[in-house]
Length: 289
Image (cartoon, rainbow, N blue to C red; front, side):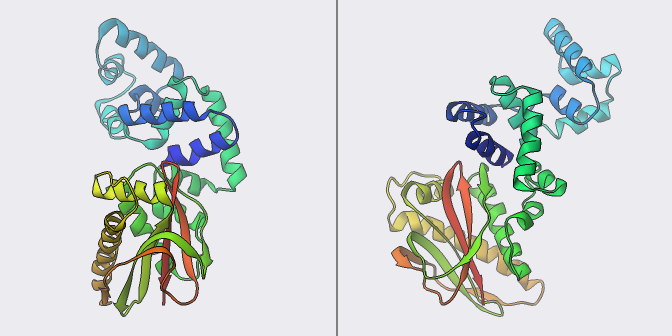
């Protein structure tokens, strides 16, 4: 997730090329963060200690953590803690930028500061983006009068990461009405909460989501492809209904609806949040009555 936010900023400001970004993404998919980079980031080792241990590792072919303990730089507990951070998306993208020769550590730090300032992100929002903490980052992108929007959108985004694609970013959303979408799959609910939740998009964009959830390639946007997205929407609504049941709130799902070049079957405004799956845009749409 962090790679998509910061990587997009670097691309838009011509700090890296599209080819370099692709190389970084391929690197991320194939690698884990080096223990030395994590230890330095966490303040457990200095830069010179990391360099020393890297040199010793080449000479002795021992694991980095074992050498750090042997030298007295880290404890076994420190090493176990660092191992638990190896899949950190922020550190992995920083490592990818460095090892692919895109930016130096100093340039990364400079651009991170500029990225935060340009988007007016607080430190807490930046930390949420680094940690892929969806609930923590949503307030920076969603200005809504009803907390239920944040709850349902947060649930949907978590499940996109879980079931469809981990490489996502979002952009600020807005309330809209009367818009024709090329493709849409959405669902209404009835009961104590009357909700509409769904997704819209264009050709390759909506296929990225459909393929990701179904784990197959549809080739074209047809009813089968949109059915895949409708099934995901039904999954999210089902999870939301289960959560509400613990609060004695009843919500039942209606059959999903598919739309081709039509307006959404709903009166008034609904909220639309842009989501980018590896750069391809789909829109999450939601309305509470």
